[in-house]
Length: 114
Length: 114
Image (cartoon, rainbow over all chains, first blue to last red; front, side, top):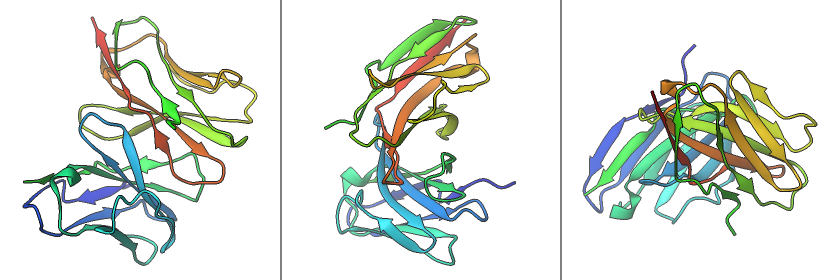
C-alpha cells in the first residue's frame, strides 16, 4: 500500500517568506509526527498529532512554526517569516496508533532558505 | 542532558563481517522503547529493530540484533554478515513511556567495503 508522502520534495524560499509543507500519512494511521533534520544532525522532534489534536508541541522552535491536521489525515507544517536557520529536511512520520513502535517515515521535504 | 549518545561518527566494515554500532541512553522512566533506523543516501528513514525496556530477550530481525544491556543503559545494534547495501547512516532513538516522540542520537555513518 501507499506509504507516507510529503510535498514538495524540495523548496527554496527567500528569507522572510512563509512556507507550507504537507504530509499525507498512511491511510488509517491516527498518530502523526513532524521532525526536522539539519545538515549532519540527527532528527529533532517538532510536534505530534493524535487525530486532529496536538498533545505535544514541545519541539516547535519558535512561534513562527505552526502545524495543523485536518480530517485525521493530512497535516500541514507552516513556517512564517523563514530564516536561514530554518533550512533543513522536514520529515513526517505516521503510526497506526499512539505509542506504537511502528513509525513510518516519509521521504522528507528539503527546505532551503536563501 | 543528552538522552541518546552515539559516539561513533563513522565506522568501516568489510563485506560479510559483523559490525556493532554503539548507543547509550539516559532516562529515569522505567518504561521506554529503543529503536534503530537506517537512513540511506536517498534520505528515507527505515525502521530496523525495536526493544522494549521490559523485554526479557534481545530483539532480533534477520541480520539485525539489538544487544540490550539495561544496567549499562546501552542498546547496541549488531549487523551480521554485512552487505554493500548496508552502507548508510544509522540512528538510535528512544521513546520514554509517558511521551510519544522519539529522541534521536546524532547517528553513525557505516561504510561497507568489498
